[in-house]
Image 1: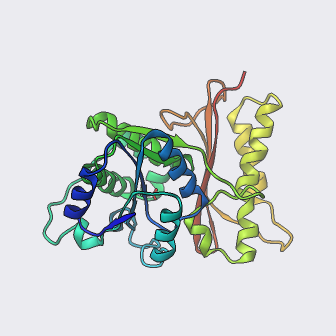
Image 2: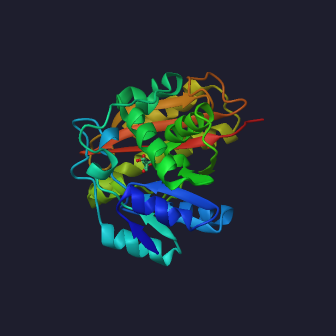
Length: 285
Ligand code: PAF
């Protein structure tokens, strides 16, 4: 496995490989990332991973400085997963002093949900992913559905800017008890981790209601609110909700009925940790 720190080195090494599938990450790799790498290897004979905690997608009061950076463990995981090339630049390499400001904005998809709660977040994501696509030049790129809005935004960016890249959406990987895997789960104390389960339990309960025939999304949202806001054993509300939403999976706009598909999405804080999760209900007959 080749590890490149500079753009020039990455371009040189990439040229030696043929068709390439790419998994962009911010490191702190877990089974969710490994499932993206496994999926990537089904689409091309070579796989590249980037490990870069991108400063431009974090807001001023967010967790950029404390974001976990276990680079040696990450490289070991990539090596054992059969990755061919890792691009692990530092911030100065990606954003040299004096580089011009640039912004890729897809306002229709970014002024809701995460974009509304994290102003500028998706501009940063688009900026770094566009740069990574130009540097790594993959034919295929894999993104997890846990960051569903990110996936939609990047699919739209690829289409709007004609990147010759196929985006592969990959299912969310969960712990046995349902908690969606996230690098940020590392922040959770055992008590917080227990409280965080309210998020996936609320989503699962709403999905069960759909399977029992409920079609009005306001009833699903009410169910999710009730679960997520009901005091647990300790007598306090388990998480602080940022949003609970039922939206159209394509436009990300609120939707009244589930028919034809709906995305149920939750963002909430558990202690100092902000978590997101969602469930896509593709269609309800
Ligand atoms: O999903 C992530 O880890 C990041 O947003 C990404 C796509 C690697 C861009 O920094």
